Length: 176
Image 1 (cartoon, helix red, strand yellow):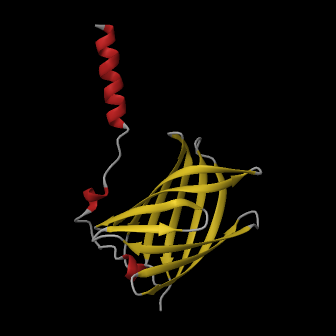
Image 2: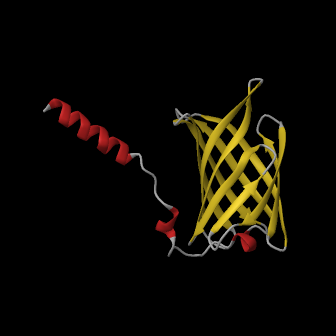
Image 3: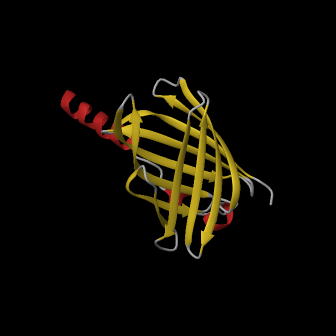
């Protein structure tokens, strides 16, 4: 009986770890249109928290977003609270009615995204420099459009299935 109870508890534990699918937000409004929201200049403020919840880094990002046909470019310029800077340039391309792919120099392979309703879910591997080494870290990145100017972003970082921490961002689209 003990073995059966342990097996059931293990199955319930695994089921509890299953993730929400982006389709869950299909009816949520306002609807997120990547070409419309990521067009022009955006400011983002964010922080990284380690797995214990401590805020390890804070940052500001200025994003210049533009489109050439179906191909979008997000030129992101980060300034961290310790004074360091970083640049990442994303290239976004639609792959279907609701799906996208993204590339950037520090993304391993391609990011895969899906948009439904007000939500975008990105999944990708980032080559992340830490203490002189580069780690390939999995990102599960969720963005939710709040209104025409504000989008909230929460990313869970993991390695080998273990949660390393979270990134939280607030995007604000500048008025034209």
